Image (cartoon, rainbow over all chains, first blue to last red):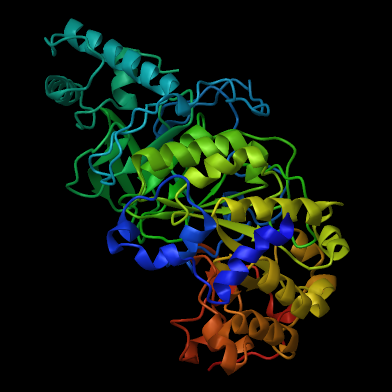
Length: 202
Length: 362
């Protein structure tokens, strides 16, 4: 079996190209390949990444900030699943110490993105449909926005829909509210806005 | 040095959040884009779907178009994609089934699965980006890895991946999926250290590794995949290099490039430096022979991570600048070197005291 496998490229190296390759139209070189690509077809083409990547395994984030490059504490992206704090650095709260390291495969139970084969095939990143937003954060952001919209309505700044979207009317309301309360005027939801309304983000 | 983490104001998140930072005047192109709202000397304020957050300490670096990952409860964000860099690498797992003597990223027991975040990050990368995938051993999470490659390709066929793997976990059942991947956009970087099975197995700390690697390589070949074979030069395989060149050029001639690599002084390689590092600045003979054999047989050989002045003039053309931008440094004498523009320099953790004996400006 092996001899047959390895004979093909050897023939190619020796200059015995399959006759089909001569008749290959130019157009086919740039068109999207048929999924059933064989090594023969591939060898005809010039590769774009001969020197594409020269990365090594030690590319890792932990290394860039640790003085010891093989520190055993804190790997690449391991993180503590403590109660997150949404606050500007000027006033950092200490969280209750319910800190534990994420167990292995902590996200393995999430629905995978592979369940969405409906993305349009396009090579333009500007028009490509973004991937599904991660459910946990989207739902939470929306809930917080709705709380803010409700508060803005109650305080008389907002008359729009409580839809969980920070649209133009909501931004305008935020600007007015931030101005009145001597907060930094951003037109966005800041920790100050949440504090003023007593909305607990976490 | 380039920062791979940035200090940020934490957002109220329960799950890891992936966000792309837009430059001045650029609107959001998706829900994952943060619009630049304000630039202060040491802080930039962004608006992500109506929420404000600040990014700190980026006075001299351009971060427009970068993709960050924020983790719940953390005030530093991981800079997954730097828009201006060709050296972006995703560390998809820290688990590994080998224990190589020169490992620069020693494995860990647990896996934090962030493939969903990486998939999203890759789909937000600049046009035509080539993204590195590393570990640990990425194929230990083969299903997740394939899903990532397929999902990104489905919506961003312009994005390429360079995947570092020991290639020992492919089976015939993977052939179809491998064939469907765009071989012009997916390059498998696979290590092979010797043509002697015992030597290779010993270096990677896994009996039977060579045999499974041969199987894996044959599957990659049948799938028409693109292969970058990677051989780190060490004292342990120094004498084997010509024989390896023979093996590579007769058995693996389908490869795209054979990379002969210098050692990176970090991780286990640092621990085992004295027994492992081969100073190739004085004696280049075995590499020269290996390169000659491969080249004569029509293969493309390349020297990775070799400072140009350590390489004999006749072979300098084989040595591109390969050390990633953020972990590269130059030595004092490099200031006067005329090759500085084309030389990859040294790893940050390179030590001249234990390094090459014969160096100097060209």
